[in-house]
Length: 231
Image (cartoon, rainbow, N blue to C red; front, side, top):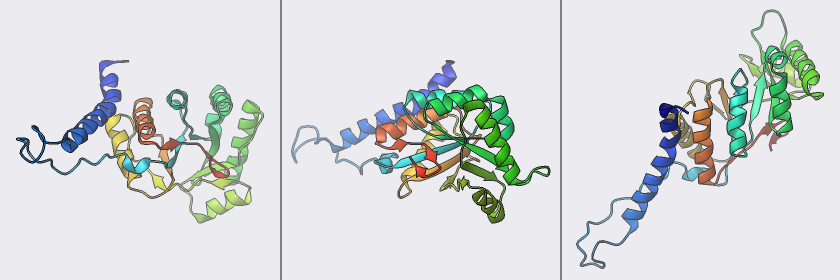
């Protein structure tokens, strides 16, 4: 790992340790003890940005490109789950990755593009499942329809698929370093209940590891999104 990647990966844990230190310092009694102590009165406590994640289930969902294997490495390191959505073409190219994800209990779905001029959504879903079956001898009923309105989603449902409609779309915000991880932690901590998050192709292994570390330390759980909802 390069020095830059190491520094990015270490940034969130360092910030967390520093925040813990400041909270402990501010809650400690003044120097000298009692009212007559010489220490200054404590200021208001520092809010832990991950406090709202306690007991919360988070379903991360990715557009699976060439970096899918690296993201799988990060997830396995934290015993975490996620959902990977492949276009039919990527399913044809990444048979080994598909087999690995299925064997590790990750969710696999088909990503269909509603603006495709050559194939309907239903045709793309059928092609994706055919490629998945050739790679794993299994099929999926989980789908993400890109650029599709209610008609495209309805067409997928009529074909027997459950369409991901995420609680939070973060595809326009990179999760590639500790700063991106902290921003996502803060967004999720401020929400009520469990949350599904669409990251598209905006995630990298360094940012994902930082995020998974923060969620685990906060008492949250990153789980796979399935055809039946949260696992």
